Amino acid sequence: EQKFRLRRCGISNVIYLIEGNMDKFFVQRGDTSIPKETIESALVSTQTNDQFFVKQTMTISESIRYLCEMTKIIQRMYCRKRVRYYRDVQTAKSVIRNGFKQSIVDPIIMSFQQFEDVNSKTKDLTLTHLFAKQLMTIPGLAGPKSFAIVSLYPTCVDLVRAYNRLKSNVEKEQMLQDVTYGVS
Image 1 (cartoon, helix red, strand yellow):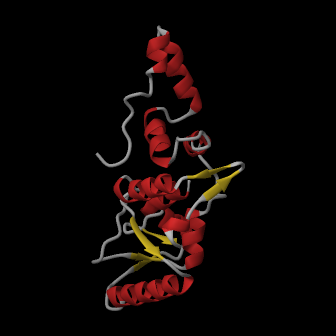
Image 2 (image 1 turned 90 degrees about the vertical axis):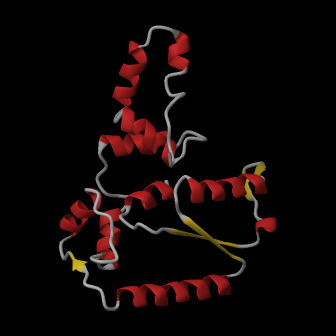
Image 3 (image 1 turned 30 degrees about the horizontal axis):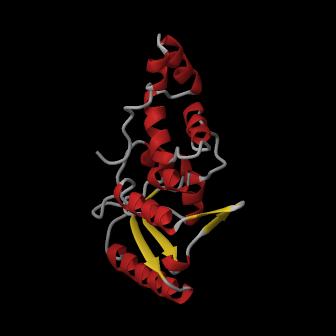
């Protein structure tokens, strides 16, 4: 869900910061843990499918240094640039949601509060967004897969209707088999 929201937030160069030694990483879920290889595979997927830059640091001090350096880089990038500032959140939201890609030449800038308002998890959800969130609760069905499904079947009702139109059990079992997701 986090990656799904990051892809939709309007930022074109997302950096996913991972802190800690991978040899000591394990995620405990009840009685089981997720193997290191699974976490590494998820990180590779984050880079290749989601096109996020994954930065790994070993300590909190290293993370702080990295964030400070990135802040300086961003400040230098924008210090002499003309930027668009939208005072009203609805206008900023509309510009971002309608496919405006930020540009170094004419970027959008907004306050942190506006950014939060535009990208809030608790905003009113459309049926399509709600359906995507429901799909993401299914194990193994992360953001990219659910986004691909809702692009074909925007609501649960659409998916069920399409399913019911299929004649054989084989067709029904293979209905979503060829759905493509991620970077093509």
